[in-house]
Structures are given as structure tokens and as C-alpha cells.
Length: 365
Image (cartoon, rainbow, N blue to C red):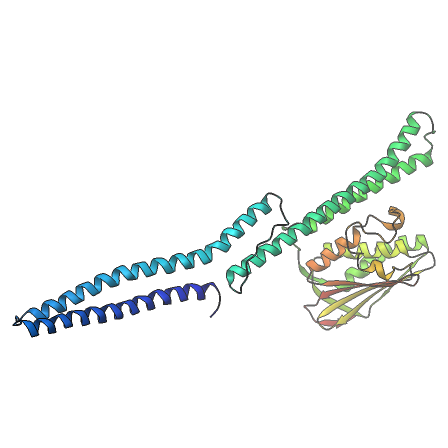
């Protein structure tokens, strides 16, 4: 038996064993002492009838008295020792927690062992590491948001000042440029609202039985016009109808973001293919394009906030950098996962795995 329970149990066993040992030794000593006195008195004097009984009674009384005193002393010593061993690391962790509350997130506990207190210490250290990570992400997010807002605001300010001061004429083209920057801000705020929502502890999916094939087909049809306008061919391939438990609205967000990304990075005369496959316990949605692709060094970061393969931070070419972050959060909320495979200049393939809960049926049956 290990852990805090073992320490407390051993302390109780130690107290009980100590009391028994003290009792045995005290009784043996007192009995021996008084029997010796009886023998001495017998040899010297004539023994009265009640002498033996008196000595036996004295031996018992003195034994009980000494056992009580020594047992209490032993219990106090062992209890204080055990209490100090248990509370010392707890006091240390309390001080560390107080320092963390004041912002000293680099504070760590130094408790060793394999018991519950050591586990609590490790958990507290892990919490401190996670808080440091979240603080770092918060600072990064704040800096990125500031950059994202500063760029269009700076552009708008310079355009407006030029037109107000008469340097520029407010031509339709320049007004359209200002409108595009306003739209850029609107899209960024919308993406931030979505990301805040999906990362909220209170975020919940409205899960129902849905026909995944029909939903994917709907979003493919809804985006056909945009693809045709750019000259990109959008192809939907599916020979199966699959039903599973998903949030229809959130799944629609996933499809809209992925199709928008594919369109954005696929040049004219390119192709985007959408497939649905059955992988036993998973529904497999694959979106493959013949776009510009992503370098291997960038694949590790594509799901991070505001990360763009295009470092120019141009929304037309790189988007707001939040789309794939939102997609990943929504897929994980469905207990699924998402993977990206890409090669620079050869296109990108995005695969979404969603857990399947219903049978698979052929179309038309």
C-alpha cells in the first residue's frame, strides 16, 4: 500500500503497536517488581493474608497509570511527526499558489514522492505551465489582433486624410478601396466572434441525426456560382448516403470555411474535389484542390491563430488566419479530427474524420 493513506495507516499502526509494547513492558516490569517485594517480605516477616493482593493491586494501578501517560506521549510525538510530514508540502503548495495568483507563474513546487500529495504537486506545476502557455497565447493573440486591426485602419485613415485635404479626389475606385478595408474589418470581427464562441467553456453542439452526404451536397451546390465565377471546377464525388450525429449548423461552418480556402488558393482552370468515404467507424470528408499548396514547414502551424502561409497578410490572398483554427475547434467538438496534406505547387488535401453512429446505405435504397 502506497500514498497518503499508507502514511496515515502506518501512523495509526505505529501508535497502536507502541501502546501495546509499552503496556506489555510496563506490566511485566511492575508485576516483577511487586512480586520481588512480596518474596522479600515473606523471607523477613510473617506475611499477612492480604499482602499479595495489595501488591498485585498496586502493580495493576501503576501499570495502567504509566501506560496512559507513555501512550499519550507516544501518540503526540507520532501525530506531530506525521502532521508535519503531511502539512509541510501543503503549506509550500499554498505559498506557490499565492505567488501564482499574484502573477508569478514561474513558481514551482518541490515535492517528491509517489503519494497523493506528490500528485497534487505535479498537478499544480502542470497548471502553472498551462497558465504560462495561455498567458503567452493571450499576448500573441492581442498582438495579432492589434496588427490585424491596425493595417486596415491605417489604410482607411490615409485614404480619408488624402480625400479630406484634397490630395485625392473621392473617385469610385478609391471609395471602393475604403469599402474593401471596412469589409476586411467586418470579416475579422466576425471570425473573432466565432472563435470566442467555440472556445467558450459553455459552448455546446446541437447534436442530431443528420444526412452528412446531403449537407455536403448542399454546400457544394451553394458554392458552385463562386467557383464558376473564378473559373475553378468544383466536383462532388459520393456513392453513399451516410447518417451520423452532428450539429448541422456547425458542420456547415466547417464546409463553408474549407471550400472558401480551396477556392481562395486554387488558380483559374483548377479543380476542387469533394469526396465522402466510409472508414468503418468514421465518416471521411476529403477536399482536394490543385492550388498553390503549402510548404512542409508551414503545415505544423496552419491551425494556429492568424497564421498565414502568405506572410503578406493580405486578406484577398491569405484570409484572416482564423478560418482553419475555427474549423479545427468545431471538428474536435464533434469528437473528430482534421488532417492536412500538401505539397508546394501541387495542391492541398484536407481530410475531416467524424465518428459514425449509424448504418451506411446505398443511394436510392
